[in-house]
Image (tube, rainbow, N blue to C red):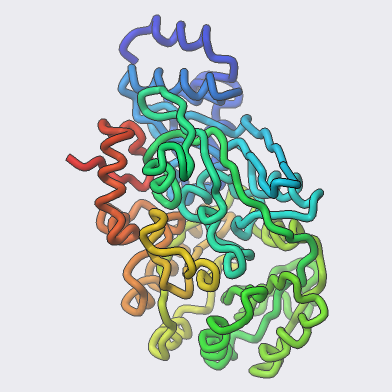
Length: 458
């Protein structure tokens, strides 16, 4: 660092906790969800409030430190950390304020989606998020955000009403359709390229009890069930959400001992507003092939949001690859058949629907421009054993390589590892140039570059 006095001044004005390599708790503070990541920041600034964020951005800028932003810590490629630089850690900023009559919620960036669901469910409301409740709100939102409610209510960014943002020059601005609308446009899918968001305001929807849970078929049924799913899902009621998966039956309740460890394909359902009709909606899946297991029942919405939390706790090895698909051809189904036998119990492939309400937003209305695809695929190699890292990585890469020729040519940015500028540019398509111009306006020196980076237009 250029000047020790600067560090002393920073310590004097910072109300949160500053954590450096010699300090107790340093190793815990640099640990994130993906245990494949082992980075050693020079300083972790765990912010208590917005003033701390402004001070931390200023400190990083003035000392020319590579600076990463950490929220929930679920970032797959580990871009929430940086070697020999500064981490602005937002995990202690966990305020939530629900306005039930207005149908909105304001959320600070240290919250997880489980925190948000807990707060909003008390009023029978929810907004769109992902499928694991321990995911942080910031990363998921800024990348776009899709999950159980997307077919009915769109992406997370389609429900973002405003954001407070600390810019690279230290200013705090409010971004919405009326204030800094260009920045607001870029935040809706453009990732962490434009500033540190210190507050998100979301639209809420009346979501309380849903009919949800898994239905598994034996893996041998993949071809007929995936072909049925690809034809059925796009025209299904928007109250019906079901993502397709391949995996292995967990060694835990509520799964019968007789099928534990068995390789399977299946669907995870979430039906809103259809409790009386739910059985009829699910029956076509049973008719195409007899299920090996199903556990579908009415439950509070936060329960389906937390379904995978126990299966995927922090501290496992993760390697993932993603792509968008407009259609699932017979040749793509054949490629799934080649790779669908997962290498470890927690490895999986998911096909998430991103149609319905998602398609009613124009591709130029937000930074997320793939408004005509039907599925967002993720292939995730996962295992708690570090010695399995090479195996799960190779499987995920090979599986992705086989499917990529049938894809739309790009991926959801939150399902990317560090894959290079061409993949990032493909992910934004025709919106990439506009994002570069907005980056040049708000962060001309690319201070916020430890991310899936969009360099400023020259």
